[in-house]
Structures are given as C-alpha cells and as structure tokens.
Length: 185
Ligand code: PA5
Ligand code: NI
Image (tube, rainbow, N blue to C red; front, top):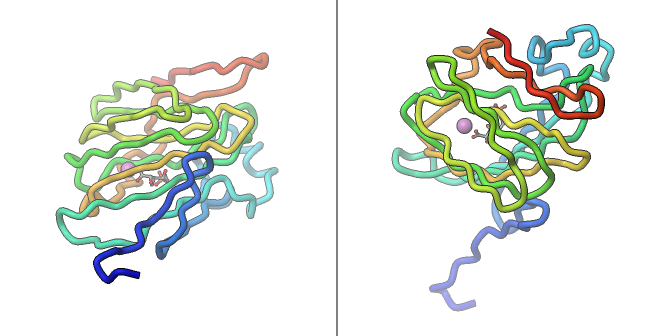
C-alpha cells in the first residue's frame, strides 16, 4: 500500500462493531452493579456473571487535547421492573463534555446536573446527544434489542462514579407494559 495511506478504524453503523484498530474492552456484570438498581432482592436473584453492558474503546492517545472514541453495547433486560442501565457518572474533570450518537436499538439518555435537575433524551439510530460539562450521564435500554451508542469524549475527562452514589433522581421502569419515569426526591 502507498506509504502515505493509513488504514482507519471502521465502525459498522448498524451494530457499532469496530474493526481495524486495537481495542480496549470492558464488560460490566450484574455483580458489578450492586446498589445501582432499586430492587435489591431482584438483583440478588440474578446470575452475578450476567453481562449487562460492554464498552469497546479505540486504544488511542490519552494525551491532553486527545479524544477517546468508544461504543457502549447495553443489553436488553430488567432488574425487577427497572430497565438495564449503565452505572452512570460525572466526569472527574467536571467541565468536560461528551457527545453520544445512537446506533442501534432504543433507549434513553439520562442527564442530571449538579443541582439535581434531570432530563431524558430518546436514543435511537442516528440520534445525537450533546452532554454538557457538569452533567452526569447514564444510558437506559427500554427496548427489546441491544442498545448501542457511540461516544466521543476528551481523554482528560476521566470518570467520577463516587460523586453520584445513587444520586440520579429519575428511574425508568416497565409498569403495565409501558415505560414509566419515576422521580425520587
Ligand atoms: O464515556 C462514556 O460516557 C461512556 O463510554 C460510558 O463510560 C459507558 O457508557 C459506560 O458507562 P459507565 O462508565 O457509567 O459505566
Ligand atoms: Ni462520560
């Protein structure tokens, strides 16, 4: 091949699968998500090894100014009547934002600011979500298929899981076959 050309990474827009680039991959199981779902008894009864979501991130520079690119694949399912979701986080560098793009499946992006104000955006193939700084974010799969979303964020942003605790004020459940949003104050 011509020495000027470099093989780029490829992402399959229908599935979110990456090819042609070294990847970092992390799966999060039921056991990893203690205290995250409202129904502790239902959580206890699940297979602790069941994978709830997998994140694949291109293994690229972590230098200041660099961007990370990753895809989250969130399985369909519920713990009790609450839909599967990611742990959710603020960025360690609170002012740093992120962009999510819906690729596959359907779900919700829960955003919450430091004053506790929460909003939900519908995630679907092609949806674009601007996550501002100082905003915690969590994906929720309300559909029957895998929810896959591409994310791009500053390498210096980091993750702060501790600051939230159980602190999202909205939970999304299936009640009478309908998606219901419940506010906890
Ligand atoms: O950078 C992001 O916001 C995503 O890649 C998330 O890390 C991913 O969705 C997994 O969620 P969490 O980090 O809250 O477990
Ligand atoms: Ni993030």
